[in-house]
Image (cartoon, rainbow, N blue to C red):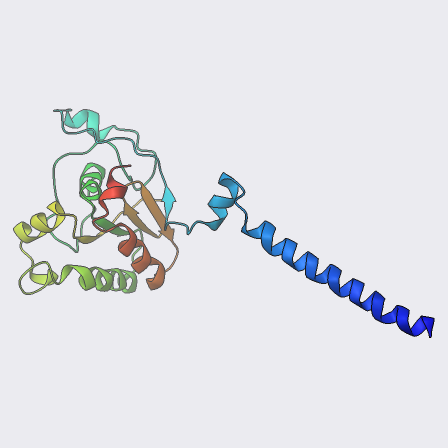
Length: 205
């Protein structure tokens, strides 16, 4: 009889320990753990962050100085620039770095490629059209330079251009952000654009 009574007590003790351990686990995992825990819990922003190199170009800096500016990323994501916008949403020619930076400074997003790849260009252009077609009468394909300039001025444009020589096949850039890609990942591209297009908070960094 004693052995029969001992077994349920042992089982109850084990059950109590299991319940205690479960409650403790829930308690401790819910407690703040300082900055390290906050970093893990936070939703990561798309792309690689590059600390802002400032907004040089508004105080009469020479073109020679701007052209030789040492950007911290390639393509650039901040720094010296000239007050020049692009002529089209979809560009057949590369954009000067100091033009790229000015476009980004206003809150626009650049989709650039380094390949002879018509399919990639078509896919990036399709993404750009999803945003740019509403910015000009008749859509982005027929946009006049004035339409493009007005759209870039307010940070509403997604711009496509080739960029030979960069170390990536595809690069998405916004102010202080760079997302390199090996393939056209539409999910990542749309996430990047949605995160940073006309993002004035990002432009203040």
